[in-house]
Length: 127
Image (tube, rainbow, N blue to C red; front, top):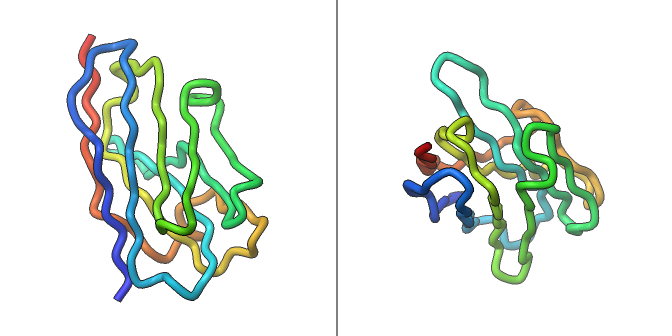
């Protein structure tokens, strides 16, 4: 059974940093792209970072480029999202996701490419 478990969310002040982790289980013998998404109430989930299985390729939307960094440790089956210079507009539930259909160098940029999702972790940034 595949499970993704996020951790590291919390309450911070504007300008501070957080590091989210996503531990995957049940995906030992497959390769998969990973992504981080966030969900604002009443809106569709949006990607904030994505990374290929190899780790060589990444994607960031303009809204977080230069502030967020995605990385992964395949030996530990864990992905990370380093978020710096957070603003109140970053307040949302953050989800990690895995796409087992992606090729090793492929980055999956949209939510409908992913077939496994974590439960989410709340990130709140106060002004």
